[in-house]
Image 1 (tube, rainbow, N blue to C red):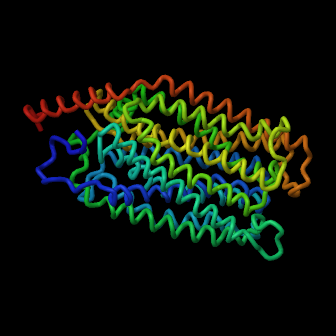
Image 2: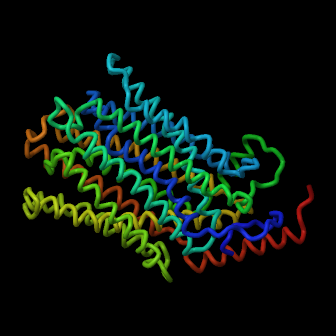
Image 3: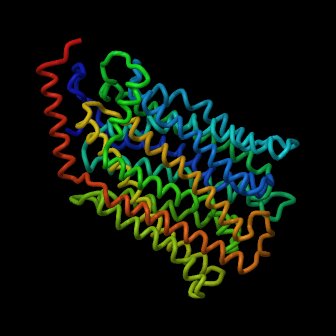
Length: 493
């Protein structure tokens, strides 16, 4: 059963082939998520703290609150799209509706009022962060769930997810590097272009244009598959209590609990890693924006290699096993440069420092992105496990649950960053190149501690995921048997 065509669907003829072109167009939509995420990860905290001048704990705490509020929308959007009835199917109406408002709000996020008080600027950031993320989520949740609807094949899902992850990285990186090397490279009156507030306005506009284009291309490119996608359940209207009960029934899976645990700890680790990255590059390694942009290109190679390696490494194996080893590799390679520098065993500066960081970064990003592809594929496999238990597909709710916990805990990562930077004495815009050795040591030690604690928790949770290649095949057969029974003896209206 490789195509998600339900037993109760009317005869439609053969489904269009989901070949390279279709996979390309489907995957490219994830570039919008990558662009938005890189904006929040690499620039937002730095912009409102170092450029606008808000205290670091204000910014990181406010961002955590914004993420928590935004995350509430995820299960609502997921549940709504699971049950949405329209001639454009369940997912596409949300995808189309999100494009224009999501892009406009993202632009406004980088244009805080210059003459306002700090409290007003903080409130402005929170409101715009919540609003822009919510509309982009309205596209991302329905779009990401399509991977579980377009195919139920254990290995094909890995290949399809690979395209989404590739474009998420490429989209985010292209804008990130362009911003650092072009928009922020030479700003009149600023030694470091990252400190010029006017540089962030063209960034917001260009990023929003690209997000709008890729979201539209992905929605239009997958539109022709709508008749063959699963339909919402045919059931009488339910009250709020019954709806909540159904939601919990769909989510009551030990396999989903394990993936949620992985998502919680990994999101916290990534929240620290991405929000602290600019500080580590700028202060600990002492590198310029241009070099920082160059180092970011490691993920171009890593994501491309992961697209190829993930299906190869998981062929004939269980996704969980490969995910564990790639995650361990990622953690060790993330920590190694800082640990070696603290012990005096790493290049002190110059080209040797940059190229050593770059080569390690390529291998690290390859392992990390391969792990991400496999874990998203494991999430898709949970959909059939839930359907076998409840008799209902809940792709939107399941993927939204993952996004919900990731957003909540990414805020924890941002708060952790705030405490690390405060402990290191970097919360009040110290001059580049004039930071004490003690502060740099505290920055590295704080980051390493968070890295090992959070990723260690992710590894423990990953161990308890139990869906295998064989059990997934058995679940598909169980669902097929249920569908045959319903087809032979349909329920009374």
